[in-house]
Amino acid sequence: MLPDQQFLRIPGPTPIPPSVERAMSRPMIGHRNPETAELLEKIKPGLRAIFGTKQDVLILAGSGTAGLEAAVTNAVKPNEEALVIVTGAFGDRFHKICQAHEIKAHRLDIDWGEAASPDQVKTYLEKHPQIKAVFMTYCETSTGVLNPIAHIAEVVKQYSDALTIVDGVSCVGAVETKMDEWGIDLFITGSQKALMLPPGLTFLVASDRAWKVMSENERPRFYFDLQTYRDKLAQNSTPYTPALSLLFGLEQVLNLMNEEGLDEVYKRHLLMKNMTRHAFKALDLPLLTSDKDASPTVTAVKPVDFSADDLRQIAKKEFGMSLAGGQQHLKGKIFRVGHMGYSSPADVLQYISIIELALTKVGKSIELGKGVQAAQEVYLKQ
Image 1 (cartoon, one colour):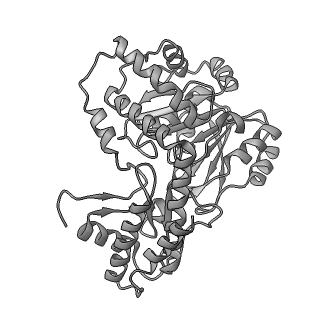
Image 2 (cartoon, one colour):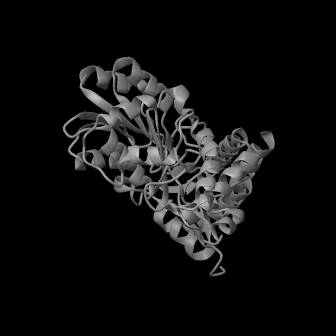
Image 3 (tube, helix red, strand yellow):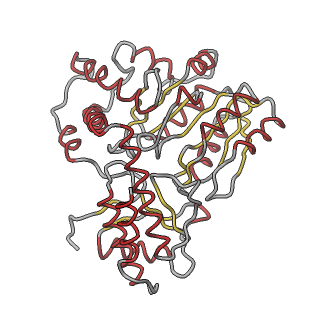
């Protein structure tokens, strides 16, 4: 293994395109200069397209969790009731944020590895009519589940007056997202996943309905006051110092996605998901999620006859490839492969081949090349 040769196959941070790295190395400019205003104006249309909205997308300097907390503090008052749909570690994080801000947060716990169903949400809302917001996760990174947020949002609108608030951190930019059409009120993502940037930016977009609720919320807030960001963005500015180098990179990311076309971006991610899942099935590796619930951005494997962490250690030590482990009660029980952003079918063929070798090293009896062949067959049938 070459010491500088690393293969990042975790579900974030993800690899960065060379052209984006070059863009981020541009000389610094003044954040109140006309050049920055021009940059923000150029960025707006691409972000709107990714979220599927006519609203402008707010840009905050901070990780995705900053966006989640901003959504909580702006949209829900202390002691109001909220429902948090928990399908994994990041749904659990939403619940913890609500608790930290004195919100009466109900939990709808779903077995990890399964998606939430609209009927489960409907039943809960009928029993708790005072709920003011429903928090959900689009892709639950910790399990590789993609939740049916469009159908859930439809149920929320039908059976309550609650806002629908979605964590889209690990999939927006890689899967179809139609915020306005689906009736989502607040949608959040981060820079370091499908958007092919380093960590450090969070993106948040709100519906007209959400803006009305937030304008009536007297909860104290300063840095995370989203109305301040909205007012400044209307002037192509930011209320506080922006992460300018990341904005340089974001402009190039949006150029790349526009050149490929969003529909093609989504097709590429579906192809990588199918190649990966067929490969693991061919190698007799149990998948944590069903095909129906599986995310196009991350795949989780729950082995029964070898240690997930042993496999990860071999992949890292001998090949420089990083795989993600499990979180909370799945720690040590699963490994996860990220396939999003600056990733292609060629990367799938590479990591499946390396995983095959690591499987042999941990003592699992497999036929070398069987997983790669299964992935190749999926590619040829597209």
